[in-house]
Image 1 (cartoon, one colour):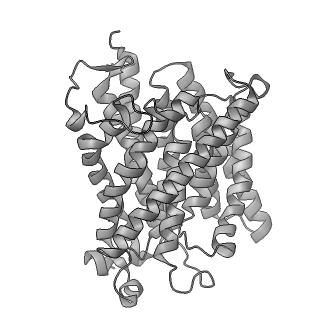
Image 2: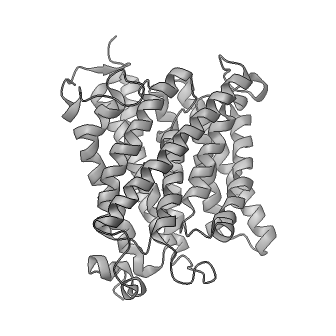
Length: 403
């Protein structure tokens, strides 16, 4: 097999788009959603995770995810990318490009978790958590699903990361938010976003970048990539309108934060199904995510009383799980999908097994990682005064706005 230059050009573009989702997209989205005194801390955390995960991926992450024939984890055949030459191919694109493309997925996944622990976590804890989490949670699950591991052999459908990205990040967010504890006054005292404008700019970058995330996962410039792009857009648009209408009905006014949160929920939900469904499926997923993720935001905050500050579990975790569970159903001809090899029942059972196994694995391993951090360097900043003053000054010695 020889290199396909059209496919290669598209995946080069997609790689840049997916990195663009984290830097600056997610960074600005989260920065706008926190109070002004914590803006720099969120931006610094995003940059830290991008840099640290990149090195982890080259050294060991890619090898653990995409080498060997093990059912549960890869081997070290590609440690430090040894044995990968400039002429090595993955399909019809250079393997080095595939390494970089998958690296951008590995970067954004722990970055999503930032939303659960903003305004109260030690910067050193973010460093250690990311180091351990990428190696012991992300890499094994990536191998299970995309590295020909046991879930891949069962035929699980996860086109672009409903399990690998959103389920792992969502469940782990709930764990770390629980052990980290609530911010002062939660949930009675609101902690409003300091800049909906910044959040909207970041969200817009996420919407654009997500085309590389989903359509790029076709690993080719073809009809499958085009369909994935279209259904991604349909889901995001539908979820935006759905969330906006619910917000409008409940609060009397359509808030910008609700509008952009709905968009992100629609994108997260369509991600696992995007390469298998048609436009009808995209609209259905967008509509369902707008309702279900909206409900889970309140459930986590007011029923579970967990301070998942920026609703990572409700939006990404629930969205990724929902899209994964419905992928087999919506991929059928009935809903305009591309069809599936198994019966709808059998495929849905496989999807359910995938969700339960990934969620439990992320839950257990994240608890272990959090306990290690708590007993060594500590998880939360040392004083209530530091939290009150903001992590910008306390952790980084800088102010977000020098007016």
